[in-house]
Length: 149
Image (cartoon, rainbow, N blue to C red):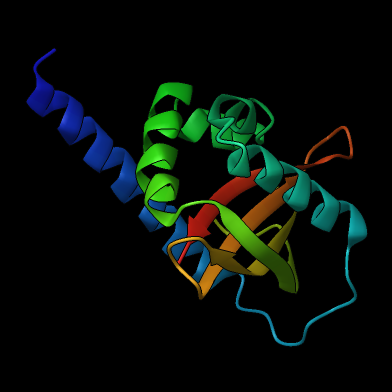
């Protein structure tokens, strides 16, 4: 496969992820902050620990079914290296807010939670991370999307 096709695929995957993120922001615009859902917050934190350790394959493997159908493990690894390596290591991270959503349009039926974090990276002091999780049929919360701004 020519290098150009690989770059094109990577760009298309990155574009799809950005489009999904924008869609989710529109879907999850909810009014007031509700009580913390500890299981989803814990799942988001544990998943971010994998990303922080650069264990991108494990972060993909522990993602939701929809997540794994949206992006291949190989593309996920490439995307995460491109996004996270320039930021350096995490210095601090604190959850800012959680927003629940039930059965958002365009996504499979289910319960969704968006968790916002304020994060300080070695090379970016004021970043925000957004982790969207879905509660799957086994009752566990798993990551659907991830963004750093």
